[in-house]
Image 1 (cartoon, rainbow, N blue to C red):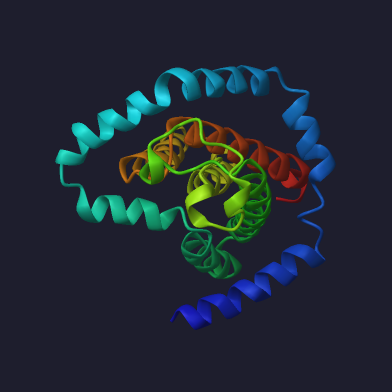
Image 2 (image 1 turned 120 degrees about the vertical axis):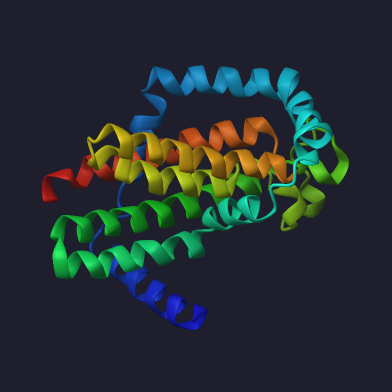
Length: 228
């Protein structure tokens, strides 16, 4: 099953690159650095690093982790994986070809958003090199250059969170229905929350991941909305 998924993913990656959906870097950086919201978010990220990260993680480990969320946690964590979340998007694409052309187009945008955010977040992760909470429980362990390609040092930003928000917010921007928009926010947020729950990320990792995911989705949607 997964072999077929990866073959289809290669096809869609080729399609996304060929049709120019990833040529958004200039617009993305403009949306990022010319937006006052970015600096407000950065302020709260810094505040979280020094004042909240350790406290929130302790709260999850001591209190919330006593609640067995088992399959729910697994479901939302898997949904934050770029390959897994691509499966429903691919299905929606083919359903859209048959029944709704707009659904097909929006699915391609979501896949493009997923791909771009995945590349971008991996670059950031391997520059910032922040240790994950379960490694040393030191929220100030950044720039661990002695372990550049080690999974334990790729905490900032949260990859699952940026994936969730970059995909969900494509649908958020397209659909004006309030219930659909609320659902998009809830699903994306739960992906990030369960990363803290599992001890894989600090709160600040999730905050910045969510914001970057929204900016990626906004940029891709704005550049392509006339074609939907």
